[in-house]
View 1 (cartoon, helix red, strand yellow):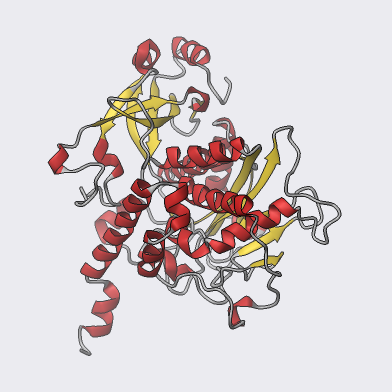
View 2 (cartoon, rainbow, N blue to C red):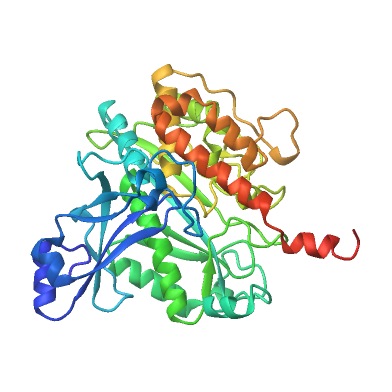
Length: 455
């Protein structure tokens, strides 16, 4: 059975009794998959044209609370519908869920059938269209890190989040023996993703106990964001089916390394040539690439709320734990926020090391692409690369230290108001403000431990 399905192949699989369920899904503001489970017969009989969902799905927080203050949806408007329009090019088998296929959807206005401006997939698609109008195909890949635990999600529900037990007891970065201990899960992830038509390259141990990474093939920007989102879903479901759990939190423990989603980026010409490569340049970087990177540096603070969307996200930016603290670029230096990889080769590209694994990939990729294209349009000059230990180098541009600062910069950003529109910036600024307000409101275990007796 093909990994990427056509309607005809789905019909054949249904007739053979191999598929009976189709997940019809779209990414929400947090990058989670939302939608419905269709009986395959209904999907084939017309359900593949469209279905509907409540428009509050782009106005909720992580707890599915109906957040007040959004202009797009609220009690005063009565919470109407969005159209979910399946993108049939994404129809695929999900081998880890018996008899199940999945299709990604775009969210459309119920009356005009125009794409919803604040929808993450639409935000990225508009920037891809902008790049194509300029004659380029944006290519990207994300490195997706997470922690794998022996505990089940159900044990957390019943007993709280104490006594987390990682699948390995010590740093397993590139460690073959340690990762053998989790191979039952990781093999299922690799094989499942391959069977779903996602070109997975490898899995590996990461820089702490129980930390892992999935790498998959460089692709066009929208395909990369779709794959990233499906991979997160697959990793959770495959681990859960084996009585284990994973977290994609940027920082789940003060003493542990954070989990990143580094984004590799380049532009290719319409005839398939790398537009970032110039063999005559010292580092193989074309003038176009230099403008692109300069644009990202110019907008680095403005975009941080899209790359690090939660209060917890900023706790990952820790000196000496391979997460950046400075918004500067370098040649193959992992202490910088932006690292040139493949210098001197046709594979030369820029890696943004700022996003955590909690980022919505559509928003992160769109924000990076928009800034890079702005740099090209304005022909911004690229400063000299930083070198050495950027953690301890003074005078370098800092990544915003918290969501409050990042949200304020986003709100005032001319770059993103021009690229995304006021509606999008205001919507996601409001989301950041809600996250801050909720964190300010809630009493934490840290406060109890620090103050219960001593205060």
